[in-house]
Image 1 (cartoon, helix red, strand yellow):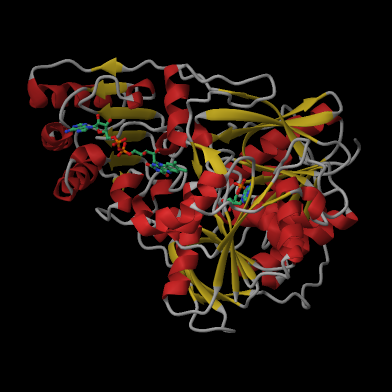
Image 2 (cartoon, protein in one colour):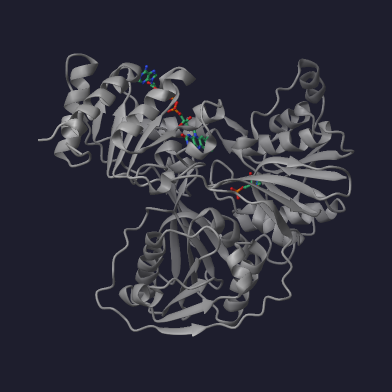
Length: 330
Length: 271
Ligand SMILES: Cc1cc2nc3c(=O)[nH]c(=O)nc-3n(C[C@H](O)[C@H](O)[C@H](O)COP(=O)(O)OP(=O)(O)OC[C@H]3O[C@@H](n4cnc5c(N)ncnc54)[C@H](O)[C@@H]3O)c2cc1C
Ligand SMILES: Nc1ncnc2c1ncn2[C@@H]1O[C@H](COP(=O)(O)O)[C@@H](O)[C@H]1O
């Protein structure tokens, strides 16, 4: 295989966190070294300001920028067309995306257009013999599946958030930067946005401290205990899926496989059993604390600290203890 | 109009999870989970995709809802689809070799062509076994239809009109519109699927869903060659270094925990 590894990032409407791009560049570098091929960073949409610096740090050989104004709209057809045209002219062995809401849509479309192999929810890509093996989460994270990609076609992989720790290359590179001319004037967006999503206030994805409540709270009224502790800690309140499904709290607060992927310093889970589908959304937290009345709850296998007790009794005491500590001046 | 729903039968993810947690999950050398005690059921999101189709029908839209599935021995699942209100169901026998999302999509595309097309294709957002969420995209490319993902609601003001989809995004709901034919994937936010009534169940029990083979469908060249094959499957290990806080009553437990958090600089004393 001589075709390069292409890391593709899309600065569309919902910008992807820079550390996710760096994680993809880190993995891309290791695969390109393993295959003895070049590493290309394909930036779709307006290039981030520090792009050359980041690329150099990660040993990127070439930066290719496609910045047609249509690409800032965050719409899929233009993006897919741009990437497929680029890859048509510059065949790649591996095309690596970091998995975001938007790339979850476009990466498989690109793969479909190119007839490429595709693996989503990837945690790792390894060079095995003359081919690639991609490890991905399955069954909501309960298992890992290792896929062997067919040789002779490109492989499109979307890397799950928090799966690779970004690391700079041992020696930086001096990447070339080229603007790729792609004419998208003929592309007709087939999906029309009637009413765009409007993010309101801070995002769970960015929170340093999260207090999450689950079905163990017993009733919707008790969710306010979670909100009170979150407030006392200066953090945000979150939830497991069942109480979102039951309408106790808005779905923007759901953490997990089908909710938000968070990476706070502190994640305190109250009345949450610790199902893998939930843990996918918080396992990157530096410290997980669990309050659960069942000593055998799976959450304790993920937690650093645990309290085995009724969360409805412990949460108010935690609010008191946290407030006391914050108010003390020692 | 014809609404097609693609439904996959999966191993009950909760049962797989329970075996994985207890350390008892049995996986063979090909990466297949072999426990016969794990129930098979319709992928939850696909059941919601059927629900989305039925809601369109309930809204007065003149349409036929057809549920198609690739898999072996799916009579029970397809009868369930009928009892929910699907007008037609069809099973497609998987090919001999291994299947991946490409193979599945190629077969589904060939089937759609064989029945004269579809106006709306509804899928689940992902299959809760592989969690890939790739088949709908590949199908949309194969059929030359646009793709709208993660629907919380799918509405159509009338025949021949575009569908309006509310998508669940990280920034809240987004409302989009797309002309038909199109592929739409359904997310859990659509809400609970309906329950079949007893008479519906009884009626469905009498139906033997038709079974097609891939030989009967004109699958495109290379369509049965998988682009990825499963090499193995395993259960990840957890570190598990939890310190259980001890104390007399909630107040002391809370104080002990907060002391640990302060010690680890996770929360600050004094403001
Ligand atoms: C395809 C798929 C996707 C999914 N996606 C998500 C997702 O994104 N996010 C998500 O959260 N889930 C998701 N789930 C659901 C997930 O599998 C679990 O069912 C869910 O996380 C459980 O939520 P819970 O812990 O709040 O409830 P439960 O599992 O019911 O746990 C409640 C816990 O509270 C404890 N408890 C009870 N009373 C008290 C008390 N008084 N004090 C303290 N503790 C108490 C119990 O011991 C128990 O451990 C998904 C499932 C599937 C199949
Ligand atoms: N074997 C299958 N038969 C019918 N539909 C399927 C099959 N596999 C996947 N699908 C459809 O594609 C969706 C996504 O599947 P996946 O890409 O495997 O996560 C599912 O929710 C189904 O709607």
